[in-house]
Length: 377
Ligand SMILES: Cc1ncc(COP(=O)(O)O)c(C=O)c1O
Image (cartoon, rainbow, N blue to C red; front, side):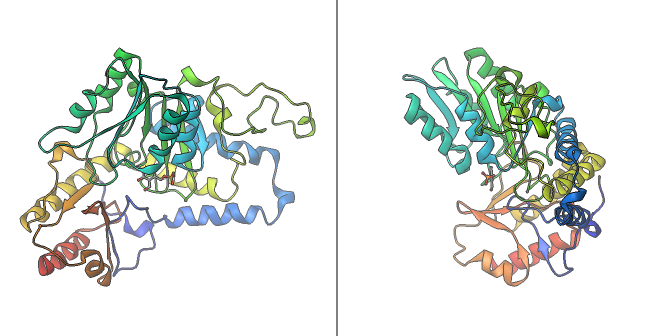
């Protein structure tokens, strides 16, 4: 169990921030690193050619270690939508075939598939939740020989319902379907072995559970797609890209691996040092320890919420870091307003109170939430 890490952040003592699924606060060390990086651009004569390459490689390596794959599988992207568009650009559906997604999935993981079926034929299947049915089983029912792509998250962003990606991946392989994952709401808080899951593509926007600056993210690309088409005609990922005086000798050849899918200007001098600091801290805590700590805190909190009359999905059907609590049907007020007046911050998504604490939260934070809820529900 990791003790409360609030001292690493600058969260005022009267704020109860329980909204990682919206975005994490930045650690002070991350803000310092971003400031240092931003200042570098004030004196461009101090920027060296290796500044264009070294931090990118370091971020790639640190992230690859966390998800147990080679850094060659990792591209640097600014958003989940960028990575998911890259995946869609490199896959086909075709008439009579399908893309399987979840109903109410995050839009960045829906629009590319809507476009793809429009352009290449086929249909989009949205798997609906059913009460008392496991979401993984429901998805598996739609993965058959007609399925071209399964495009799902690990944890649904509204309620935190969880999918078993190993089982889904096995079934995809049996029927020859591609697997594309949006892990934005789980990586960093759930131990994830992409080497074992072996998806085609997996993306993460890192500003939530990876505690990184906004506009940083990572795209895992399986070896099967290393010869694919990037979104941009980027120069820095081509062979001999380090040779700045020779860039007009244009080439179609890229460096090996997923690097060709990097966003343009990936050597983001301001944001990358911050992303690296966050990755190092996550590595130091250990994702398994983060997961165990959040699981324990959330299971106590979920029991307290249930005793107030809110309903929370069972522990085996939700992410260990994620509580989607449905208010009792009798409650009619604006609970977000009530809570935010007391400086308690959560989200509401699709009629569900989304409570997503992290290591900066203490027992006092949980007590304050329960106290206010108990007075208003
Ligand atoms: C599941 C999920 N994916 C992705 C994102 C962010 O997407 P993007 O990076 O395209 O803005 C969010 C933000 O809430 C999310 O919940």
